[in-house]
Length: 127
Image 1 (cartoon, rainbow, N blue to C red):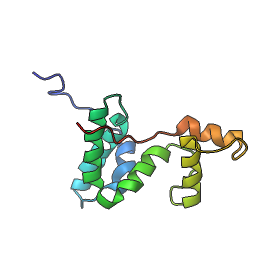
Image 2 (image 1 turned 90 degrees about the vertical axis):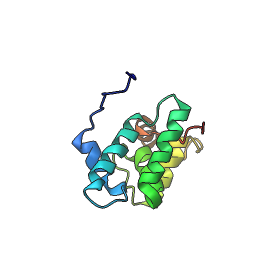
Image 3 (image 1 turned 180 degrees about the vertical axis):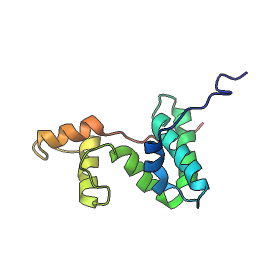
Image 4 (image 1 turned 30 degrees about the horizontal axis):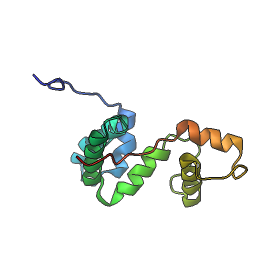
């Protein structure tokens, strides 16, 4: 028996509900897609770069045109006070998250808030 056979990772209702807006299908598939996306967020940033690519490809298929918005949610969604609908706030958080800024561009509080809660989506490496 394969190691993962019979093993099912549970996903919180909160995680499922947070990813629902990024799915492309109509209900009842929406709930299943949201659950799959929640698993991708939970386990998509692992060390296995090929596994990361597979997860990224699944997310691209599940989200379609909403892929970029989903990645923004993954990277920035855990940052308190960041409005993902505000392009300036998103650009600022992304700039801090990637380290693309100069000393004095942002307050220490802004930097700490983003750095402590920023996750960068990985597309992995194709096998």
